[in-house]
Image 1 (cartoon, rainbow, N blue to C red):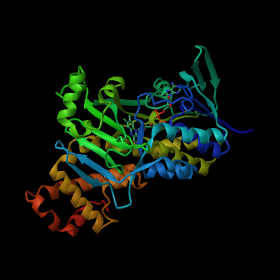
Image 2 (image 1 turned 60 degrees about the vertical axis):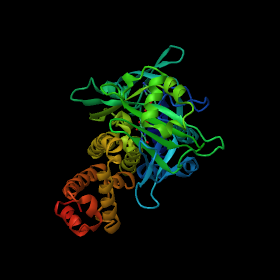
Image 3 (image 1 turned 30 degrees about the vertical axis):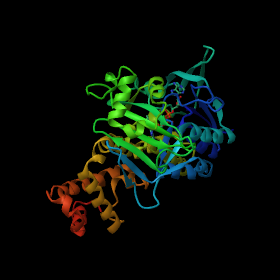
Image 4 (image 1 turned 120 degrees about the vertical axis):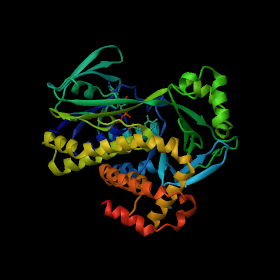
Length: 450
Ligand SMILES: Cc1cc2nc3c(=O)[nH]c(=O)nc-3n(C[C@H](O)[C@H](O)[C@H](O)COP(=O)(O)OP(=O)(O)OC[C@H]3O[C@@H](n4cnc5c(N)ncnc54)[C@H](O)[C@@H]3O)c2cc1C
């Protein structure tokens, strides 16, 4: 008889994990609170509707044998296109010439993964909202669409039910469970830029567009239908430009005219989008342990991060890749061992990427527009060009490699210290391309990052 395993949540991570587990020959069931959105034209319930997929995500998709099905749905972005307040734009490549991150619609991506899990034989149970989990008895109680409740007893249970995980809630009543959550000062709202009347992209289709304005920013990612999905990040309160100070359509127009004039010209549905889309909060959660009595937290349920490194989903996919590697090594009959190894090995890395995601908000909203920051990036790019093995920029280590996040974090800190020294030269803006680059590398070597 096939071994049974139950997953809570059919989001991106639960769906990919189901594929991996089916391929290991298990009897997989997924319980999801939403309706089957693959039949209706759902919009993702106010969540970001396109995502940036990068190397770690691709690697996990490839191992699951699903990469080829995803490829036709992506739009490459080779760098950031910065929009200043006067409507000028500047392109900053993300990495080397052929390196890119890939924009993909959250809904179609989730559908591809879930269709594949179903085709492999996973049992999908929609409109099953987890109400309660008893970790000791491994009993899960659901409420169903008709108001009835239903309970199941499980052998092995994985919570892939996102940042507000019900399994994690149940862990909170366990002894010595640590949990930290932090809402940041900013929230976000989704807006859109449609294709031009000629049916073309209204802006450069191969970039992630950013309008950095210090305490707030707008970003836009291209979609395959030649539209862009924009996300406006604003503080909830405490600043002149904040959600609390937007009372009517005039306020919306005023902010856009003053700060995002070139974008506004391309947003005929701005007012409607602003008023009809929810204002959502951004949360960082960290917890430990992730496992108890043959149950496990994975993806956002274990580590929800703010979206400023574009890694939440990629990191969750990497979780699946690593868990599958452990199942390959230890088999599917020693779940406790596999789950223990998984949490021990993975926790330092998810802590590191949660921290990096927090730190990157400052870089995206403020620094990218600072001329000194641009010089700093040029110096780092030159170092990467001259010493491609010895100096890999932090962004590249996170986005274009599968180096452990914790290792990338440590190396990044050393690089940052050395670059702070380099940038402290008052003449750096004139001298940056005449620097002794070998000496900079030597400093990094001395500090132990190479
Ligand atoms: C604005 C924004 C932009 C982002 N951009 C990126 C990006 O560009 N790149 C990137 O890598 N990451 C990005 N992320 C992060 C990414 O969205 C998450 O890391 C990813 O969706 C996590 O997937 P998950 O399956 O763990 O959780 P979720 O996607 O939240 O899925 C959880 C699933 O569980 C279900 N569920 C929840 N509660 C219950 C319950 N009680 N009972 C039953 N089912 C339940 C939900 O309906 C859902 O289907 C972004 C996040 C935000 C907020």
